[in-house]
Length: 196
Image (tube, rainbow, N blue to C red; front, side, top):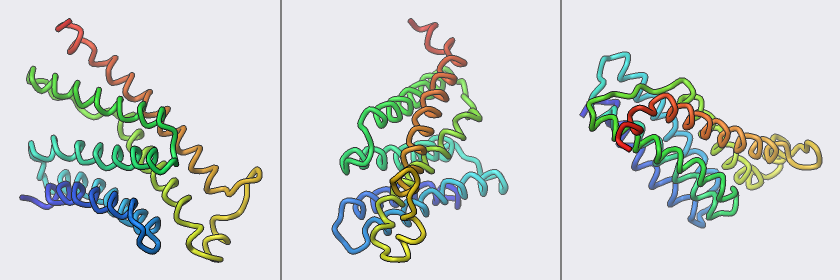
């Protein structure tokens, strides 16, 4: 197994560790969850970069890399609903989009059609990762004492600015996720309309 595929597999394992820590009661679990999520997100960046640079693109990587991304971000968003950190309807929009696009790609593969990633899809992924990091930061910084309060506790419109950032990032992620999914489904509508 080449290095990019090892990083992809590692992301599955890091997702399990991330969730276990997020729902644990160990000291500074919020900070540990933040670090683990950031490391997992870094593996997403590195596996693609290494695969392209060293020409190590494989069928396994094409299938499992986006799946690992969706499982990592989807698990985080669903966990936020369980922790009462994010409205369920937002997560439903995000998860539904990911399932719809995965279904479309499977349909395309059954017809020997390869669907390339869209530019909006990359922006969507970045917005989702940013939203998750912002939410984890909002959870973690109060445990950092005076340093955390000094760095992240400043107020903006009567609430900590990091809370405002987390709210804004959630909305950006939901809007980009919905929009990128709608564009992708529309551009590839012939694939599913011809079977109706």
